[in-house]
Length: 584
Image 1 (cartoon, rainbow, N blue to C red):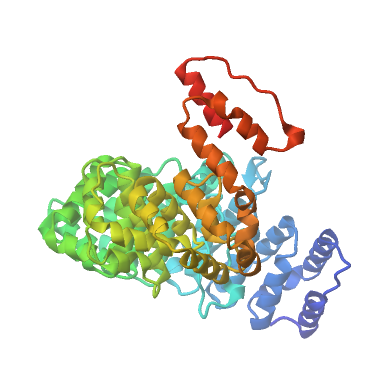
Image 2: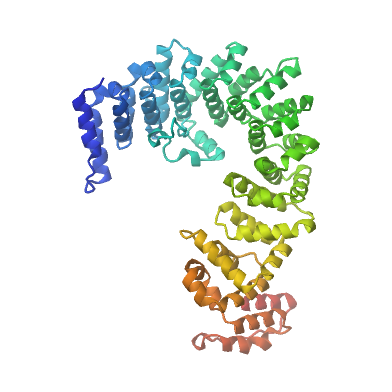
């Protein structure tokens, strides 16, 4: 146990909130405190209150002192990794180690986080007699192992929810959750020169696991501790430039080389429908395109594709596979298998499978699929409960994916939207008042690809209804810009004639907008200031045969101090139209 006076000293220092101290001075003071307690780091980390104090101190220290704290834990690596309190400390220290480049022991520049991960992992292996599965199967040390895998590749430690979602157990630094798969891959590639030793250690670990008995390895995939650790290992390896060893491990687990093809299909089916096994399978599909295609072939056997779509867990595996694929052939194989199965198709077009529709439509649009894309778009637009899927408020995620799926479907060419125009009008007016990014995207897509129902919806609005719409959006998003204002801005994709008519309607309600929709009024003030006389002149210019004939009226409507003499000589038709456009 740590000494009580040491805990009191840490408690007093960390609870002092002197705002006059600069951040640099606080960092230097924390570095001095960490040096003073260096001989008691392990005992403090394993104490319930001390572990929290040590994490708070580490967040204020320079990176070199964080590395020093980790080194003081290496001699007790096994005990600390398996302890409920100190395992959290090790995760936080690994996440805080940073990505600075410094000199290693062998005079080779190393990534600081990678160096810390390598040293701690080697200390764990020595203490555990190279029992890798034993380390990742423990309830506490599995979390430490996951953090080590990320750091050895030079990547930020991915966030994980802990226990009762206590804030102090959020071990991610610099919001690692915000990094996309491509950003992580770019980061791993850029640090490859400095993380070579860590990547070699990860590959050797993968080879060691490949020689584990297959039955034991498959049971580990379903284990609540080992399964997520294997998933992290595979995901990290997939981000590295060379993933051959990861492919070998996947082939071993799924028995893809087995002459009995049904055996591999049964393994894929079992993993996909298990809550823990599906996490491993989602990591597996990110390894390579060959692995993805092989898994699709296994899913198609024994007419099980409808079971994958209907499964509450397996449908997420399908979503991950669709979003990860970069091959049109793989997409068409899986997409057509789903769309050609009547049971799967019926289940697909329900409100709780909009995420799967979204993944299929967005991937088909990205890969420019002429087979899956138009088919899923036609089915989705003809769906009788389309409005319920897109506008459902009970589950925000369903609302998001429903809107994103509709945005992707509308972008395909040659779609017939005659039967769903009224539904699209209601969806457009509802999305118009929502400030969420997917709603903004849906409004832009509807204005561009479905102009007839959207302009009809706006034309048919009475002035009072339009004002109520603006005020309700203002009330709903008090802290954000009014979302309705974007259709009245110059960059809007709304038909200019419809936009002018709506602005004329709003000008007679300027005082109401000023008082009850101030954010809307500020955003559209310049548009509302335009006079109706100028609108008429612009309309005349657009249809006039001679722009020069209307020039005096245009100049007269402007400011006297800014009048300029303009002459438009006789020019060809193309140049004349260009001048008219400039005047507008």
